Length: 331
Image (tube, rainbow, N blue to C red):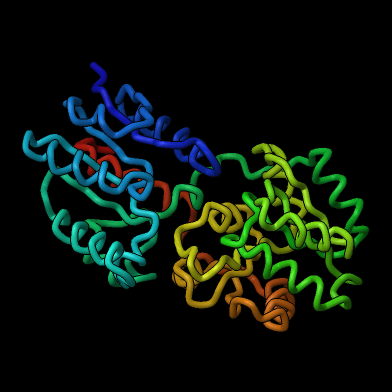
């Protein structure tokens, strides 16, 4: 008989749908009848295991649910995306987040799982019970990248040049302004590179994006389908992952770049850069806001070669086992 299982996901935006699909499939394979809910409140009455897809979506909802359900020995597991901010705790809110996670850690029915390895940020071990690899490092069964009209158009525009792609939401958090600054301040780049920003552009970046297009860059200001996303990874020479200092969390873009074997630029000192170093991924970390560093980083990324310490299959087996254990199931 199937057990009931709640997956709490407050939104399906960005990469969340891919996470929902992955964990829904994982639950079914484990003999659990998965139901996705968009609010944490139903978890209070629910007797079966619960997985919060992203603790930060409703931190206090996760805490209240976990504490209340623990009174009845009901298992609650949550994925922690921005654990480093709780460790470094700059400000009252983040200090409180860290304190609460430390208090929850070790409570038998509650399992907080970082999606950044402890070795990439040792302090995570104080706020999480264990860690898994970001599912977008191991979720793909098919690594083919068939072309789409969008990727074909990019390749045609590139006309033999290297292609740097920034994927997903295009805003200051994702370093769009830095990408454009690099393009605008280094005209010589345009002989050998095409920069592409593919995803919805935030209104505050619209004028900057227009200047970027005027200088020969490409902006695809629309929702990018999974098929288009895959095709753009196939077209890319290098992937952009140099996100703003205030945006420091796990990244699905990074995970997919690793799976597709594409080099990626990252911000030096970020959690993703530390994760890449641990994995031995084909990544180059650069200082944020330094166009000259970006130019050098592009050159290094093209010349480098991958040496992944763990295969996606190894990550998959380990991560699935840990999530299932948190839900009281075996592999």
